[in-house]
Structures are given as C-alpha cells and as structure tokens.
Length: 75
Image 1 (cartoon, rainbow, N blue to C red):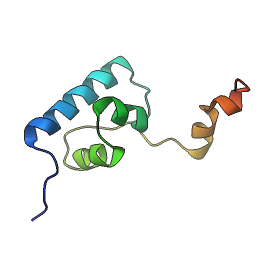
Image 2 (image 1 turned 90 degrees about the vertical axis):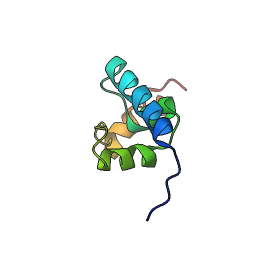
Image 3 (image 1 turned 135 degrees about the vertical axis):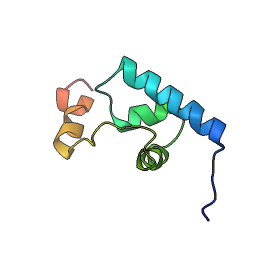
C-alpha cells in the first residue's frame, strides 16, 4: 500500500486552487498551475492519473523557449 503524503482535505485544497487558476488562465503552463496550487507538478500529475483534474498539455521545447525573456530580447 502506498503512503499518502497529503490528507484528503489538503488534496482538495490543491484541487480547488488549481481549478480556480485554470478558470482565470485557461492557457497556463503546468509549472505556473503547480506554483499557484502550492504543490509540485508531479503531485498534480498523480491527481490527474486518479482522474481528479485535467492538466494543460506539456509545452514543447520550442514553446518553452518562446516564453523566455531571452527570446524576446528584453533582458
């Protein structure tokens, strides 16, 4: 049996915050969503595997580079 790191109440708080952030910013990244929720991306992925949340798709390397201020020349 796997050990749970968070109680059900804590997981519900993470899920509520994630749903709230997704409603405000539907085109957000997984990292920003995890930061706002207060957990790591791996925790949200585990909750996604349990069917409790649907995460945005992973960014490709090209998309991730495009979001960097270095790519825009504004450093």
